[in-house]
Image (cartoon, rainbow, N blue to C red; front, side, top):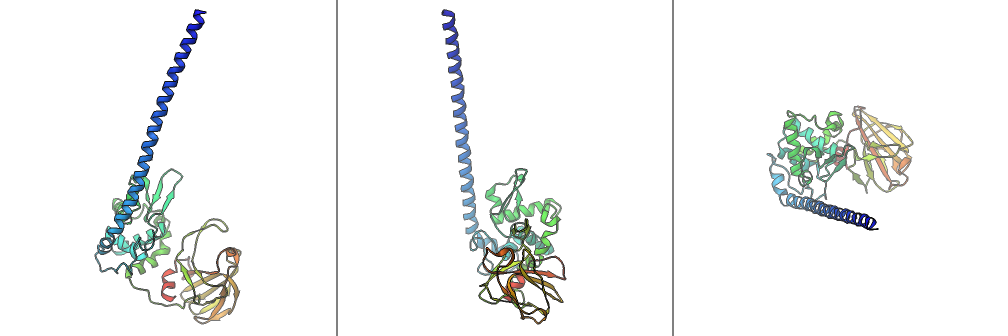
Amino acid sequence: MPQADGLRARRLEEQRRMLYVVRAELARTAGELKRHEAALVAGVLDVRRASARARKRQSKVYAGAGVEWASPSRCPTALELGNRLSDCGLAVLAAAAGWDGSDLVIAVAIALAESGGQADALSFNPNGTSDEGLWQINSAHGNPMSCTLDPRCNAELAFAIYEADGRSFRSWTTYETGRHLAFLERAKAALTLERPEATWICPVDPPRRLSDDFGAPRYGGGYHPHAGNDIFAPGGTPVRAPFAGVAVEAPSELGGLGVRVEGAPGYVYNAHLSRYEALGPVTAGAIIGYVGNSGNAATTAPHDHFEWHPDYGEAVDPYTHLLAAC
């Protein structure tokens, strides 16, 4: 019996020691969790403070580009557009960061292709990194989010990467793949600070609302970038040929009732129409159909999906043409 009692005592002592170790480990883990929580809260506060600082210094940002840029009322800031900068605002930031000449145009086009001007854009990669802000700076560079989500700081980081790469844009996939090319015309227009001269007739009668969504993700029929701009208007609103040419019926499963207008500068494609009107040879402004939601747009508001293919090539962003014409 004394031997059994001694064995039980040793086991109890071992259990007490194990319990002590477990409690100590739990206390250490709780402490680490509190420290992580504090760091997370601090990070969120950093982002909020950075946003506040960016708003306060917006007049300085827009005065530092080295040319006479438009006022913030004509060149909206992130504050005025929520978390999205205007094209003009992107141009100002890129110039202030250090780009000039033709590379300034390319830098603005890359930002449009990478983030669409969304200052808080975040993309998560399979390797655990993230791409952050206007120029989608990869987190592997080790910069805090308080900088990458700050428009001016993001522009400066992007310019530093560009300089480290021998003043090239090879670090941006959108440049290497050529996806930025679709935004070059828009970037050039942003740098003029002037409304582009109207060379088209607006393709949709008022009341209408332009959606600046070229390149946005679309999933109907599988993932693909949006190849045009949507022009929202009441169902049955006339859709017009923006220039003289030939209107050709072009229906499809995704686009529903569609019409191409083929002219000297290239062709435009209008989709989701409710019905056709004039086909064949048309003058600028001729009614070729009516706004609807045919094809895969049955669950969305009526709109004209409008694509622009200059010189009969790939689709490019038609937004500057639509701004001028509409």
